[in-house]
Image (cartoon, rainbow, N blue to C red; front, top):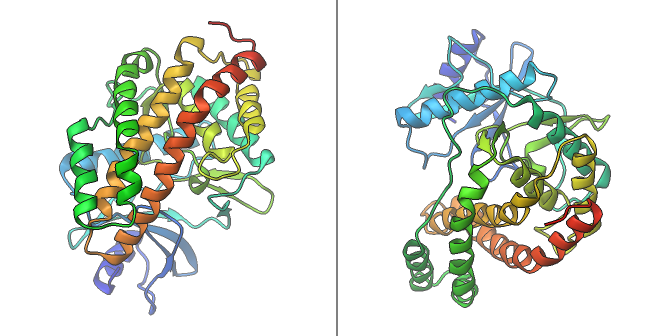
Length: 337
C-alpha cells in the first residue's frame, strides 16, 4: 500500500491520514493485510491480490459476499464484515482494491493446531449457520471449480520444464490426481441436490479467537450456496488436522456428532460425495498454486510452492482415509446405506 492509496482509504473513512503507513500483518495465503490506526481508531485493511482482475463481475462478487457476512452478523452469527463506505464495501485506488474491517483483538490458531474445544465450537457454529438458509437471490445455484484433466496435465508438465521442487511428486501422483478429478466431477450432481448459503472456507486461518476463546468468522469471500454435508465434512477434516501428519480421526467424528446432535441430519446419500467434493476443492487449490509458483513475484512464488507441497500430501491422505472415515461415521452416527 502506498501513501496515495492510504489517502483514498482515509478519505472514505472520513479520517485524517496518519503520518505512518499501515503495518503489514502476515498470515493470509491470498491477499495482503494491513493494520491501520488513525484518529484513535483501529482497522484491518485487506488489499486484494494483484493477480485478481477487477472485472465488474469480480467486484460485484466481493460486494455480495461482504453483504452475506453482514446478514449473518444480524442473525447472531459472529461474522466479521467490511465497513460499507459511501454505499460500497470495496475501495478502489490505482487499479487495486481494498476492504476495511474493524480491528479485532483476537488471533487465529496456528494452521497446524488441533484443539478439540475450538473444533467443536466450529461444528456448533455450522449447525447454527446451515438452518438459517439465508435467502440470497443473486446466488442462483451452486458453482463448482472444474479443471479439465488436460489442463492439469499441462501444468504438471510445465512444473517439470521449469524444474520446480515439486515436479517429481506431481508427476508420480498425476494418475491419482486425474482419477480423483474424474470422480469429483461425477459427484457434482449429488452435491447440487441440497444447498444452503454458508461461509465456504471455514478453516483455522479464517477464525479469530479472543482471550475468552470467543470465535469471529472472517474472510467471507468464498461465501456461496453449497452442500451442507460437504461443508461439515470439509470443516471437520480441516479442524482435526488433515493437513498435518497428526490427523485426529476421533476428533473428526466428534465434530460430525456435535453437528448432528443439534438436530441436523447428515445426509447419508451425500456422505461419500462430500469427501470427493473436498478433494475437488483441494484439486482447485492445487491448480491455483501450481500457477502461482510460476510467478515472478518471489513472495507469491514461495507461497505457491509451499502450498503445492502441502496440498499434494493432503489429497493423498484424504483419499487414503475415505473408506475408514465413512465406516466410522456410519457406525458412530448410526447412518445406514
